Image 1 (spheres, rainbow, N blue to C red):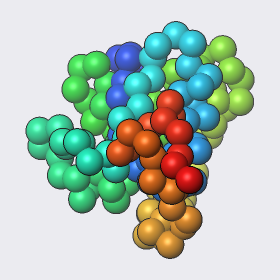
Image 2: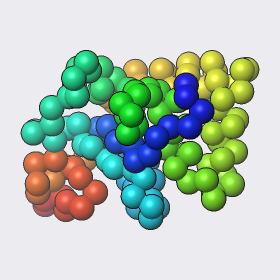
Image 3: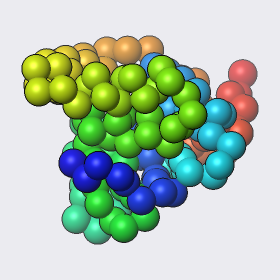
Length: 139
């Protein structure tokens, strides 16, 4: 993985998954430097970027930086954490998950999560058709 992703980055996440959406929306709310842009891949109008499939993107988190470099899985989270250089905890996580012994374990743990993710609770339908952070659930 490139040591310094080029910001801003696009985070491709499943907005219909409560856990996934909550995690990514947490980062998007804290991004005051316009370094992170969320893309809800569960939106009906979503079209996968060239070279990627919707199924692959639904399987694991993808981040694409401004140069077009694609990061997946734990590497995608490391890029997100690097968007917050002034936050020691995120710097620590980025460093920790890049360590030679920790990284393979983290990737394995993420793969297990990705397989179990379909059993997690889903969000209710959203007013805009997709579950973007600024949309409100319908009752």
